[in-house]
Length: 594
Image (cartoon, rainbow, N blue to C red; front, side, top):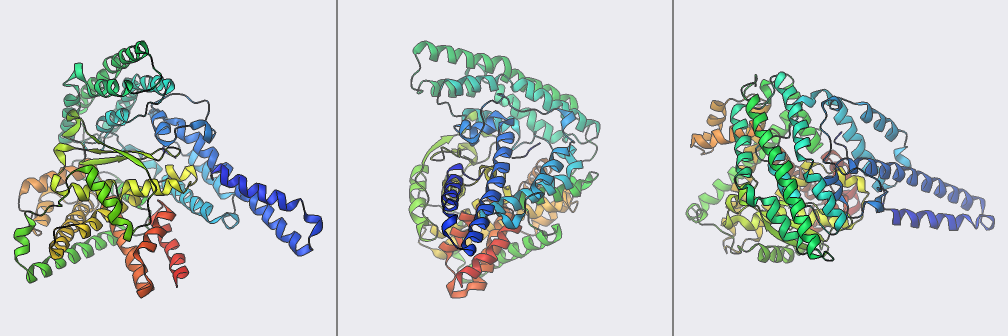
């Protein structure tokens, strides 16, 4: 199950306060006594719900030690003491079970939502929607796969391993243990892919070739593998280890990589090759039995926005047309903008200088971020070809001041690194994540983070960053912002078209030609990308649209009273939730501003 504790210190203050008051009940009036009784009952309800969510976090987080370690530095502080060191399980007999969801949903419904605190009600609503969505679409588990060209486990696992924090001997021992389980886990994963193959749902050959190529690229430099070199660098800086311990750990790590990780990738290659040619439903999800329904699930689970696919498609049309109209208007006023667009660039190109500048520039429109540390790292050459331009690793709940952003030198444009780091850093992912964690939310909220909110916010911030450009030409900045917005929306339009409406490659090519994409290779690349990872782009672009719609709603309702910084603070204080819930909370916030 891919499931996900009000903070103990805060809860303790509330309970102690009420117990101190209740000691003096003999000296107060009957009305005051009734108020005290109500307060005591509220405290009991608060604690019961916190216990439920705390227990749920403590149960779910350890199911994968990498996930647990990425969430908390000290699990014992979250009621997690004895746990198995494991990469998790991918056993086929567990994939179609719904009893756990039903049980948890029933336990959740035992709580009276009206008796909970405001923050607990948010958690309640998020859990309710999550459980209901998973149950509604639980019969579609065969569509799920971890082998995709951009975000697949064969690409992400080495980076995740390299970012696994090593602070003491326990961390090192657990890390090497996890490395040694890679072949077992990949073996279980391929058993599931065999089941998908029997249903005709294994990946298309062109996607399989990319996955195979990725694995072969990773295996090319066996003697100087990424997981050996990065470990050797990190182990040397850990305090308290003797030279012999460092040497022994280096040898143990190299052995785990050579005996378990590399063979796992070789087996994965063999397994994918053996299943090539078994796909029966070429094209987007539309062509698969219940494929359109599964696509609806992807949108609902990521966005949590009660809009039909047709309504989301219409919103994409609206924003594509608005951005195209803005570009046309700007070019009509100044035709030289088109020539200048070819050479447009943010002046800052050093990542550290960019993040320092962004931290200062956003203060006018965003609440102050917490003080944190961050490291800029670069993706290893063996992973560059298929990795994203950049990525941000979410921080630990109890160590949120340590952060890392990875940049892919071969897949990122130095001229737009500024906007990329606005997405990954400030005011995007790193800002939002560290801001929210600094508020000490219920830990279960960190497991519930919907992708539409996370990536939509980061894309919204990426668009915002164009207003900060120092090109000295505000119209050029606006042109580039509108251009980026149009491209962002076009990608999701194509995603919906292929996977929900059944566009063929020809239909995709014709659509893109209308917007100036006359190179058929671009259409082919986009078509194959949407087939390989359906529903990936909407969380960026439709999520971004959701934030723009929220801002428009607030501006319309508040008029001159609208303040952008206050609006952003409302969003940051609320934290990552489904967009239905953001809309509900926005109405409350608007009323409070009048």
